[in-house]
Image (cartoon, rainbow over all chains, first blue to last red; front, top):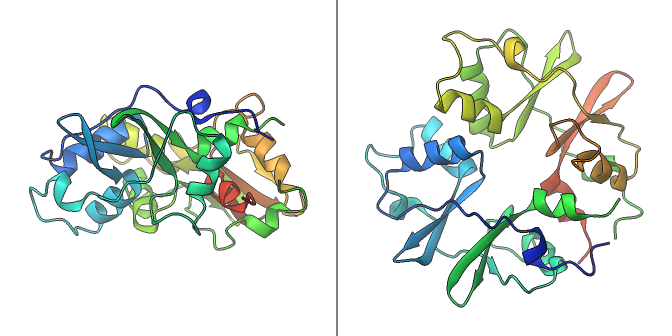
Length: 130
Length: 130
């Protein structure tokens, strides 16, 4: 179905990111502004976490964050990553609930300790030849 | 890959909906509260539109809506629907940008003029046997 495709063929290469010290309200505004589902958190160019629109929106609406909460306080630190040269089916596997640990709609694409892209379930659906 | 699966096998059956007269701010809060990507808009139990978290969030953050804007003013009226008995690959096809007209991350499942469910790209990814 997409046997010959690699992660790099489908991923979004222009990744919007955020520093750990940013306010969660600003992070949410950034997600909404760019219409994206998650923001990788970078500290000195290294991936240290991820925040999702779903979680931030849910907690902000329900008033679960104290005023001034920063990204680093609430980010998911155990980020599921994948390499750009891996087969697309590996991305599907990592997004599968039985293999993942929470963040399953988007994977951060990392190579040599550097963020190269991001890949979402929607990106994969669009890659399926129909 | 999922040749034997039908839409009804994968769709979410408990659909959260909203009436056309509701305020867009309330619609957005509902989307965030339930952690969902879109809300089918129902008038007298009939599907009349859809609103997405992406569009509402983007326009609210950028202050594009006048105060008191209702769902019916901004909803997408041309909703892409699918039947519960259709093959899953048909859902993939409808989500593909070359076949769809905008709302491609979620399809409303309709049978006999009644909303039976909703299916997202994430639901489909999870259904792929890996």
